[in-house]
Image (cartoon, rainbow, N blue to C red; front, side):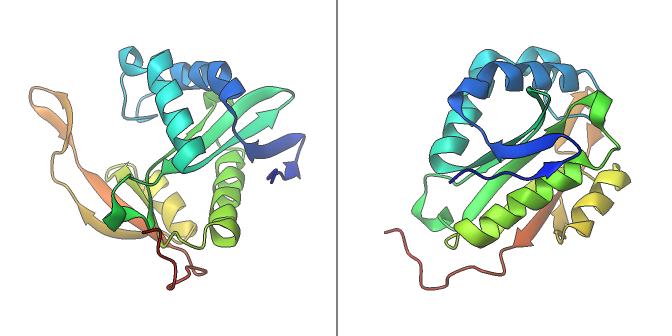
Length: 184
C-alpha cells in the first residue's frame, strides 16, 4: 500500500531502503541545528541511518516527505521486539530540512503518520516520543496533534559537564486500537 498526499508539490510516502542516502544527508543537515535532534553530528553515520531505516520498515513505520525528488522530511518509529511492548510505536523521530521548517511540513507529515497508524496499525495503542521540556514550541506542536505529557526525566540529556536538558515523555493513543489483537 503506497501512502501519499500531495500538498504544494510535496508527496508523503512510505520510505524504502533506496532512500537511505537522502535521509542520511537530511540528518547531517539537521544535526548542526541547535535543538534540531538529540544526536551530535558525529553520531549521524550511514550505519545509524541504515539501522533505523531497516528497523522502521521491518517493524514499524517510516514516512518521507518529498519535494521535487528531494527528501525534505522524515518521520519514523518502531515496535520493540519484546512481547510486552507489541502495542507500541516508540522512539518516534521527526526531522524537517532546516530550509523548509515553519511552512507546515512537519504537521503534514505527522498527521499522515498518525492517519496510517489509525487506519493500518490496529495492533498499535501507543505512539511515544521524547521532546526537550524547554522547547515549548515543540511541546505545543505535539499537543496540537493529540499527544499528552506523561512525565519528565530531570537532567537526562547530557550536553556538557554541568549542562543537562530535561526531556518529557509524550504519548498519543490510537483511537482505532483493536483490543482483541495479540501477536503471540
